[in-house]
Length: 158
Image (tube, rainbow, N blue to C red; front, side):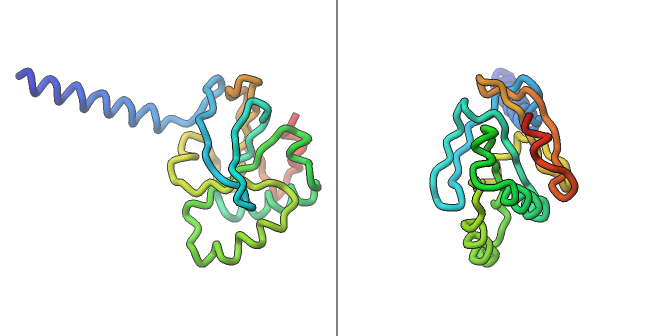
């Protein structure tokens, strides 16, 4: 009986951990650590100086966002204390051969997230870039969703 209780307790704790991990970030939550490199191979360090995180999880949406951010000019993201993350973990190796050199030509820094579980905690909407406004302590202050094909990005970085 004692072993059965222990097994049920362990299973219950496991399920709670899975359920807690599955819930997307909400206002007030701390942003989890992000380990990734940018398109030039430079490690990205999430610091308290970042006020906005732009997160693209779909290829089509990230292409539109790349074009809009490039049009905004070099230094635009830094001036707005923003970081732009793109989920590439599902990109096939063949596609990377062509996509990465093109990404290196963009003036903005693109943080390439290549691990499936890094962005699972971030909320997402189809066809949109998630924009998290952060407090100075690195907590989520506001969550919005930018449609780069139809909207200017500057409205989201205020």
